[in-house]
Length: 117
Image (tube, rainbow, N blue to C red; front, side, top):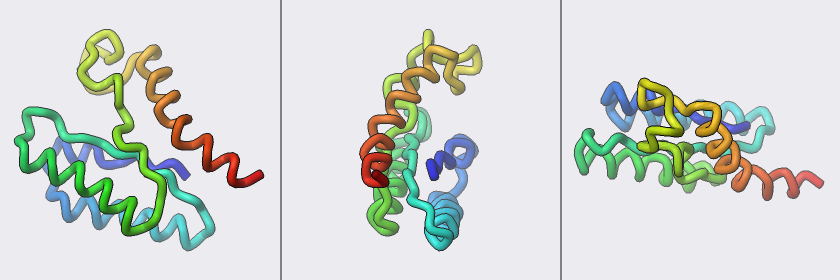
């Protein structure tokens, strides 16, 4: 299961502990049903403050370590902040941006797929 959630929580400034609790519950439920989880990390926008940005980053790395799941460090790597790869809202990727995101996900997913064979 590819778990990519948290971006809206981050944009709304939700307390990190609540985001972590929500994601942790999802991971635990998925694993209890035999799913292997690939956690897609997010980063807080630069205008959210250094402390909040660090807490968001640490939340995803901590969840991956705690639940022993593979982490994509930043789901929007190479896309976030690149105008030509984002829609007019500056948040959601364009078709070209989605291709970059797909490659980012595949780099982490491919080794997991090989483990099944």
